[in-house]
Length: 164
Image (cartoon, rainbow, N blue to C red; front, side):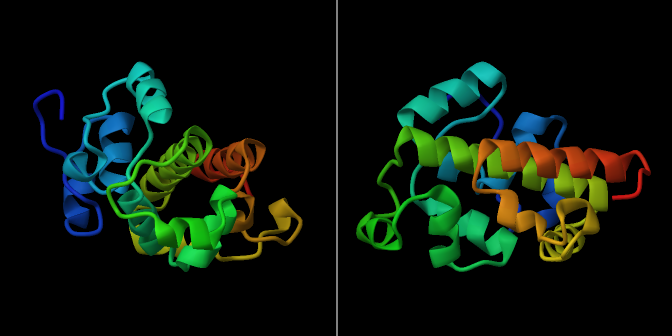
């Protein structure tokens, strides 16, 4: 692990999330902490480097727990077969595209917790059918970059008090 500060896992220590100073630290916390990720993320350059190297499979379980979805649903969001994920050990590194999608989802989670003030409130919102999204659930859009952008735009609208 490079760099100094140890970022804690949001699931194990949710209160620690709120003291984090920037979006990169919050993303690291969402992914399971700097020990689970193997890096401290401090910039977009770090995100690019991690995307190319791959995240460990263990972060998928962390994200699925936060999103309150099964590993099978998580595999659908990542466009990787559930069986392929089952065959990997927790320390096996994921390919570029699933890693990139996980980082995008982690960014949405980070933003959502900031907007709603808690993991629980954000998770409940993710599973609501929203008129703004053609009566679909925000979680249904987390499988593509464009869908992630739409969900982030919706969160931004909520943050600024615009009906969504």
